[in-house]
Length: 354
Ligand SMILES: [Fe+2]
Ligand SMILES: [Fe+2]
Image (tube, rainbow, N blue to C red; front, top):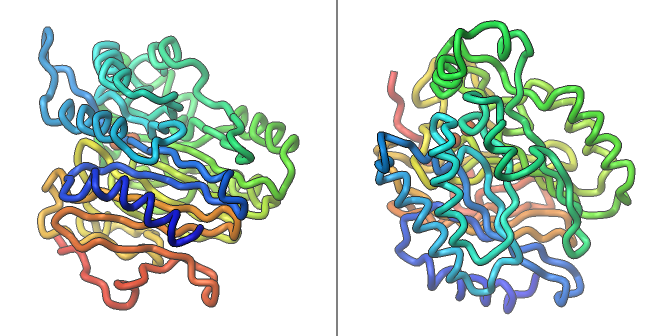
């Protein structure tokens, strides 16, 4: 990507979001032939929460309303918007409908992935009725995009453990509820993925969207997908893969072989990093330099743009963090991994609470 292109994107998105407190991502897909470049926006984890009658938790509404407004003002205009899951807090029809009503203000085509908060009340029935299949693929300007539902779990846990959908949803909605169950993509979707990818040339840039990370970071909070290795094996033959996920409500980045992993921020609230709050073993990517969070419950502490150079197969992400310093995560060809250009080796660790 030329400096001019990058400056132009920054000029548009930066002018719009300067001083903004909203987590919103602009992703540029860059090619050697610049006429092929395009952008898409990423919004995630709104957790719309119904109180009663026409009342919803105002703060979560405001986060999503603002994301929609700012996306509509982006320059250059994104080709489409990707929504990273958890529209609803407790999977209610009213929450999904209210969230989709707000999202209907977008002037773009929106692609959706399902989050666990959208699923575990009615096992995705209402979400699918409104939005269609929960796993699918599409092609856009030479890039193959795959969407996976990564928040499935054990059959018995889902169908034979709980007295009601509400009980099941409440257990899965708790970040650290020990009665929860590990997420997975599952056999059926992996078979579909294998067949879908068989039709794609291995030099085609591949982008995969999921809700949970397609890697194993911290099981207690389901920053985890149980069959991650099997999915990574299916992605391995491709020259370069970028995986985007929501769910973690924080910035993470990682590189496993040919796969670059990028998380999206939430419009609702940030989660602390696991090591700040739990003594349990976690595998947070060593590459990730955590955002400094003096107060992990400050709701609006990050907003970011990400630039992806698919031509070289590597990602450069520019994060503009409200109440923090802007940072750039760029691929270092010497070390062959993404690095936080300013903060790697000079980290400001999150505070520890035990
Ligand atoms: Fe979430
Ligand atoms: Fe989630």
